[in-house]
Length: 155
Image (cartoon, rainbow, N blue to C red; front, side, top):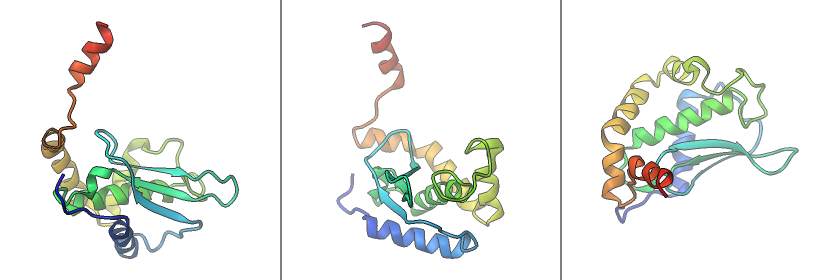
């Protein structure tokens, strides 16, 4: 990883910007926390409920690798927007759940495109497809799935 890192304050500012520009019509009805989590090879972001049963927090966690300035900002923006759409659809939030499953019929991508985030979404998908594996290899964290499966099957 590079020495220059983003922090949670930067991440909150990115969320605030995206919220004001693209999502201001969606009410945030509880405490919404956004933070960097641990570095992860496969999960770019997630949303979950906090531990409290009543008045729970909604927690958006962004992949810890995204602290690295080598990851384009639009990749992080797309992941933040994706996770916030889950919030808007009632997953890990007080909003009424809009769909039976969180990715039903590509609804997240559809809604992001409807909100004017189509170009960011397309760029993020392209960058991940073309660069993510190499990024992981360069940061000494890449493990071939083939080797992992081999170890499991032939122990």
